[in-house]
Image 1: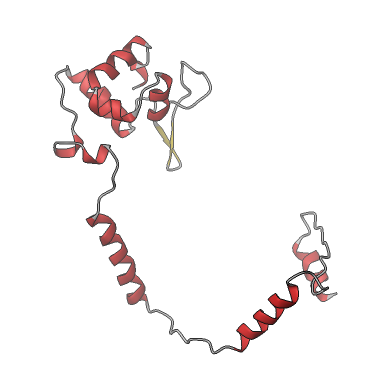
Image 2: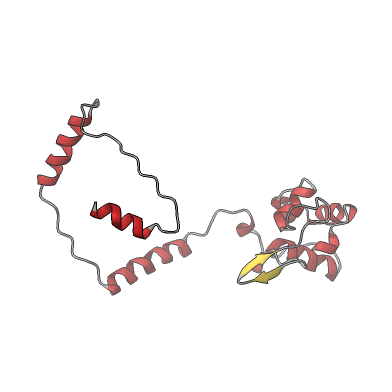
Length: 165
């Protein structure tokens, strides 16, 4: 009853349902599981000393170093040129729009308590205007942004989405 009283005091503000589930009553394989568990408790346990802060730090640092040595396999990561630039002959306004779309810094982007918030899309009127949603709206993929930037800009202009980028 002591356990029940503790649960009752812990759950004053919530509804508590207790259900009895029978165990150790000749269910198939239950006896085998019990004997294996008892056998496991009698086996010698390997003693592992707790790690110090420096050991934990060096392991984490090694993990981070490995992730930096082997870059991700994303298509945008393999872009040619410094800073993953997109090379095409257009005016500065179009270059800026493509850069905003590429890196997710759209005109409609706002930060609220550290989270990115986008306005609602003017075309679908129910989904946030994220870069991926803009591409989905016009049935294009992210690779089109890198491989066919001129075509992507023309499609965005034709669909009236340039004011969101």
